[in-house]
Length: 262
Image (cartoon, rainbow, N blue to C red; front, side):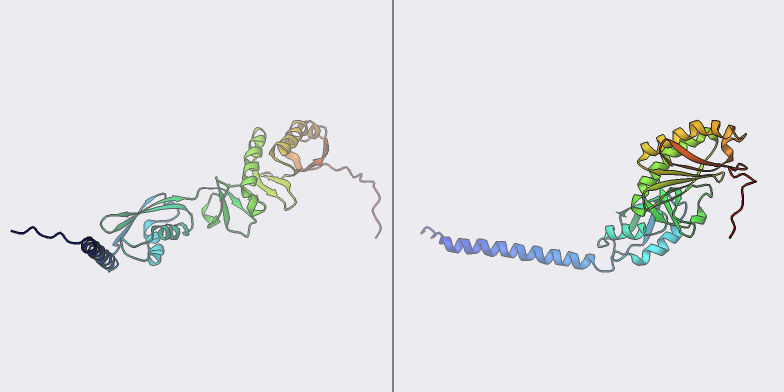
């Protein structure tokens, strides 16, 4: 029996290339078929489970508001877009969205925790403990929250200043009702008893040092007029090594002073 003649190298190479091409085509057809199947309405999302803090929202309204924005089925839904949809809901600070086999989404929410009202009384903004300003229904929060105001890009700085100054009034049983930072960088405090204190410009260490000097001496100054710290109506600390003070029931204008003739 004659020995078989080995196939030429070019024939072997063609066979290998043909086999590889066949395998690649088969894999592409398989992948395309799988992708087509996954995109069909065979795997709809049948439910959304909501976990976490939902004090200002409830699972029913969340699903009703967000579900129309979700596109795709269990396999094709864009989880990043789904997360963004939940985070646009009022009071939601962050959301984590993941698939839960076989046909559900599980969403874990973290709600905003306001520490102060932000802006003027006509606004509807709050600020959280991280210095982030967010839109919400101010009527839903504690009416005793302080009001902070200033350039929106400096909200974190305003909150930081509040945290420095608020404890300084505690020994005198006063609370900060409002703290404002002007566009020129000047600080102003309104206390819960109605007293206004102009603090001037500066960083927290400069402003707090100025306020500390005032608080250490104002009791003695008010006592000279038989008044207490609670009688302070207005104080201006923007003077070097001094301050201007107005006390309830105290005037420096003599009753005999002549009136101006118009």
